[in-house]
Image (cartoon, rainbow, N blue to C red; front, side, top):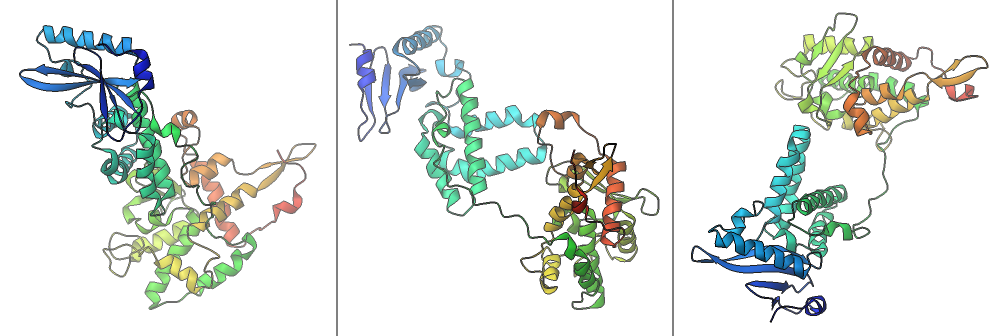
Length: 417
């Protein structure tokens, strides 16, 4: 006797999955979690197979019977409905891994290669071990949450959110392809552990910079040569606003025109966080350090470690700051925030009646920090490097560090534009 709408609607979950038969191989599979799935049992080439149509009530009885009718028509033509379905590659339906692979391949060409690799690596590390072999239409919100909880236990709250986002994107792709009827991550709002309050990298007030630089010039560790490399590396980081890793792995061949009027450091895309080449205009003070290290440092690295063929240790500069007495007060990465604060606070008087405007455009500051464009559309069209204004800004910063024309502009603010 065919299944009725009332029977399908009132089907309650049990301890084990059970079937409610309709006719001609079509049945409704009721899962212990309450999910109700349309399945059709059939034989092809002497082998019993199972076809998945979707979930009830998103797919009603009439629609499920239409799909059964279409499958029967294909069988009459000697075709396997599962193969003809196109999207399905498994006898029991698509696994999450299968759909994720197609989702990733579909969007990969539009992504930065480094970013695409990071996204897939996160899936392989955290998502696939938990969900990869599960049929995508059977995955529920509690299943996804259980996977996320494992990530949260190691304190990786940002990674847990990225994993949820990735799973949600795979399900949106699956829904569009007719392989799933809903996105379980949509029900997880409020279930994830909240992020701790953002703690910015420690940095000194600008008025303490002269005292800091005085201590840095006198810094000593084991051996004069090692001390000089560490001092120059810390000062170079302060002068250029780059990240620690970008500085540590700098090689001599990346520096251009060091003896000219427009010296520049060209950092390759593979070393940048955002995966694109970054040009760093060098002030006269930064170019002087680069010239000195190019001519004197052994090996290819601008700031070699204890061995010429190895870069400076990742702890060398931060430990130097500790020894100088700035533990918990200043980090190497914090130099970036320090410089950004300085640049964004510089104002100049303009017009009559007088008003104050920014001396350095925010785009110059963000480009120097190698930050990504927050507006994706604007970022796609804005490929400007702003090298000339950034060069002027970086020279002003270097002169400020040298104590030339230091002005507390906040005392002069009257009107801001």
